[in-house]
Length: 313
Image (cartoon, rainbow, N blue to C red; front, side, top):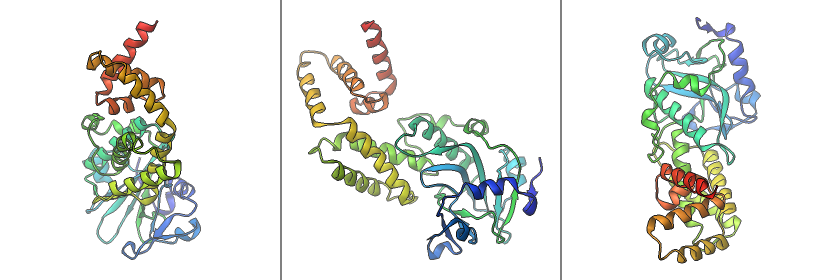
C-alpha cells in the first residue's frame, strides 16, 4: 500500500496525537533544552515526546542520513513504518512503528516481555542502520509543518510480526547484556540493579525509605553512560527493584536460610544448593532470581525444581 502524504495521513496521525502523554516534553531547538507543556501547547513544537514515561506504544528510530520510505521497504526489506517524519533539508528522518500492545516498564511488567521487545528494538536499529545513541525521549513532531510527513493506514504491528523481519538469535542469551541502545538500556539497567540489590539489602537491612533511596542512587550511577536513559525511566526501574526486593527479602528470612545452610554442612555442594533453591522458590523468588543468587544457570534451576516436584509427588 502506498504512503499517503500530509492531509491524507489522517488515521495514524490522529492516533499519534491521542496517545501522547498529558504533559509531554517538547522543544523547537533541542540544544536549548526541553520544556514540559500541555499536549495542545507541545504539538506546536518541532519536537515532542512520543511515549508515556513507563510505556512504549511507538518504537521510534532515528535514521541520521538521507533516506526515504521506499529505501526502508524496498532496499532494506523492512516493514513500512506507520509514520515517517523527514527533514526536507537533509533527508534525515524518524520512523515510527506503532505497537498493537504497548510495552510497559513498571514493577508489574514481565521481564521476559521487556527483553523480547528490547531484542526487536535493537535488531531494528541495526537493520535500519539507525542511530544507536538515540535515546527516544523526543522525536520529530509528525504533525508540525517543519517536517515532510508520510503515513500509512495499516494495522498496528505486534512484536511477533516485527520479529519476523529481523534476526534475534544474538539477543537470546539472558546471561549476556543487551546492546546499550533503545529498550536494551532498560533491560541492562534492570538486570544490573536487581543483581546488586539481592546482596546489598542484607547490609544492615535498611528501612523502606532508605532502601528506595539507595536503589535510586545506584540506578543513577549505573545510568551514567554515553547513552543514558531519561530520569523518569531510571526512577521507575529503581522503584520497581526496591519494592520487589524489600517485599521478598527480610532479616528473618535470611536468618532462616543461614540456619538451614548450617544444617547442610555434611552434604555436598550440589545438595546444599538444591536445598537452597527449593527454599528460595518457596519464599517467592522466581527462577531467574534464584539462578542469580546461587550463580547457577536458569536451566539448571528449572531442572532441579522439576525433579524436586516429581519426588514430592
